[in-house]
Length: 399
Image 1 (cartoon, helix red, strand yellow):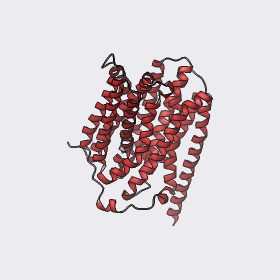
Image 2: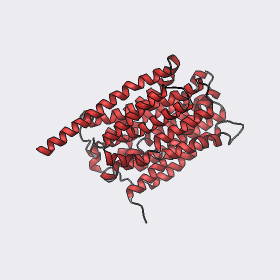
Image 3: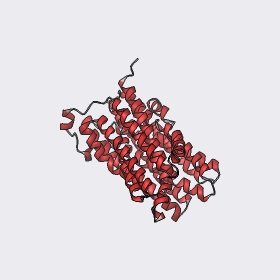
Image 4: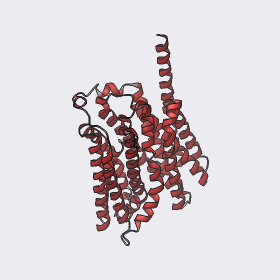
């Protein structure tokens, strides 16, 4: 029996998400080491992976506007082909032992990420209203595959072309992007109509002044940045505490599962209990993670903290994305999503870059102390929005 269009789109997008995130996982595990091997100045060792995040941030707006013109399917295929090119440039950089080719390649791969961030929106934009939150959640669930496959592929691919270390990893990253490009040919999302392209809807500033938009963006910015602060600092701090690479990989793998495994049920929970309640549970989980992180330096402290911050991220991020879909008409979709993702991934890039510096200049507890007030602020604004919605519901009931 043929799949319903919504279900087929979710399957294609979730699989593409898994392929992209697997490539990102390989990058996260090996690119710093590759940079350390090639960089003359070892201070620049993490620059290639930083280039991925920066490219992703700057590509979000043009990617959204381009897809509004040409459609989701050709836009996503183009993004995946850019990812193929990025992996090949990085592989060439490893082959000729040139650091700046590696940086250029990871930057180009990051541009694929600017397109891939819209997989979750694409699933929701044409889904049945009752299926929107589930569609968003299930697409993100593709990250479960990446959490399992990424580390294993990184270990396997690293030795493919011995004695040239890391060359195989970037060939695999290119291959994953190519498979994604082929798979996305099956995506069934209509191109924007001439009327939608003709009308741009309300001014962006007017859209951004909506309370729901403000809360949705803050969920993305604070929820994601809190997770990024903790996740980026953890491998460094675990090394300071004497843990080995295998221990760190174990913690990060479980953290990734915490981020993506709940996505199989998050959409259902949002439908049953309400989006704001699920976001508040996510904030509480992230706050508890910060407390667990400073309560000791045993392996169990890191495990509980990183799993909790991952699950909390899932609830807050899926909830925030669901809220955002309430803020725009089809004609306003591209600019609203672009504004959201530019702010969200700009804050994530900043958090990722600052996390290591804060840990180096101060300490682990300072990293957690910076994240804590942000979570408190997010909790307050979500409660405020819930109160406002209850007032509006009561006013409508008695009018």
